[in-house]
Image 1 (cartoon, rainbow, N blue to C red):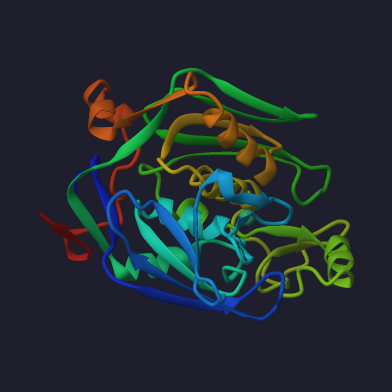
Image 2: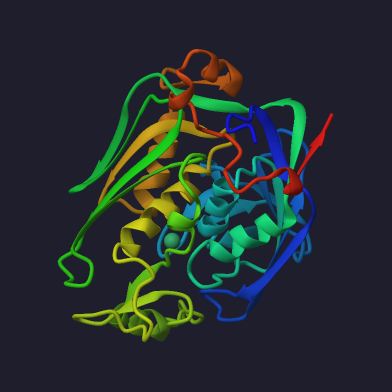
Length: 322
Ligand SMILES: [Zn+2]
């Protein structure tokens, strides 16, 4: 399989995924469907009186506390969709450019707190290469940085999307962890199963306020004062920082056209990730949109791995349309 695919990619068929909502604790359901070239990822609330489409773009981020929420007001009502980041990350990890995501209700299901269930569903559906529709990318013209206290997020020009993340917690079970990942080159399994995490004392406070009612040991790593509470422990020793990288890929998908760059994150989270994406698009001096084929043409092959079809794709689960 060509590791430097320059055509746009969508899903080969529709997939329905069910679970529960993190906030409501009630059943939540999403349907992923193939979409036309240049659609990007488009969320749709069909359960509302007025059907509302919300593009996966930083302009529609309304909240970043606990999870990333997208929202859009129309003439009669406002629609929101919460907990979009792990699904967005899965779509990018699996190489999907265009998809429609229909959500029944205000939340994407939390599944097990990671992106693995979404990745497996996409894998089972297979991909559809939209041959003749060139993949476009956002390329940085200069380094951009945002800071909040000791939290830093920066991006530098590159022909790939590479994330380097560092977290520093005083909690004994977390401590300092670092991880790096290149989209389209590294195996999605390195980060796809890394779960979100939270602290028992925060969970109790949130649930008293009627929030995170669906949160449980089934969909998060939960920590008490000293240790991980989940009976089965961790999936990776550094699962916490792997999850940060997963979140960052989802948050960087909040761009109408895929961003390439070398990203460096220190103690950052959803809020700072979204601010960095917004900072890139704040001025046309910061970026330009190119065809991925043109980016590849000026790079050494080994340096150009962004946007390629991931290694999991084989002739059996890829359909090309001419
Ligand atoms: Zn997360």
